Image (cartoon, one colour):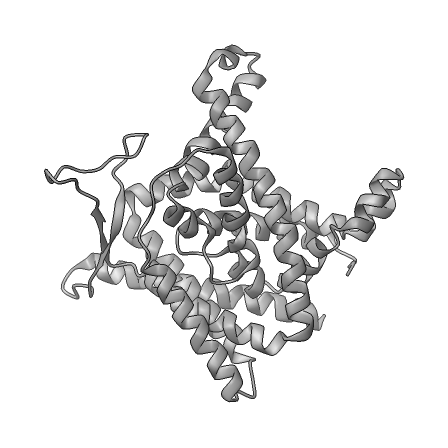
Length: 338
């Protein structure tokens, strides 16, 4: 599925990868939705599907140029570059915004998901009993996952590898938030905060020729965790892409119905107006994870207070999120027409 890309297309592809990476960092938001709305979801899945035995043989035989073209290398490299940039830039900005402007961040992403539901469903015609059934199953699955309770943190490397396989699902399955799944598995802070920060700090140390981190056992452990998580994510991307490639080829209409339902069912996770409920012990003390962070048990969702300015600011950011999706869809439509 090779395409001729202009310089502008390449820049936009990097930005789309950046958006996917940022979306995957936020619990309840799926990078797969970005791919779906931005119009490159199927190309993304089919490109990943090319990472197979034939691709491995091309590498072993030294046919690197053929390998590059076979896997749609330009597309994957630009997209992954955007994701990597996101993890070391946008994700840190998001961390700051989530701490200081949490309501508005949730509102923006809530709007993005509403816009995505509209965008995906508006061209979905011929709703029949089968499609409605699959959509309902998708909604029920999304609601069920949003109601599960988080587990405790576990840094066992085999479990971390499993987290990589499951956590990367947000990139390939629109509506399924990889970050939220990691929260349920208990390893969100370990894998998307502590390990990423350890890698960032290590790269900064290496650039400044400071190798004292080699004697820091915690840093080395976190780097091992990051490496194993990355390997698990790669394994998950390849395996899930093959499954989804087959499903999209043979059951495309049913798959789209499930995706629409799943995204709709996940709206409860990103409902902006909510307060955190923390786990308590028998003495009513907050339970902390190994990093001293309060463990979130669930969220208490409530309807907004229409008498305060913050509510209308939140509604404004919901509209901004919706218009971002519609603007992106408009750009893609015009580009395809040209």
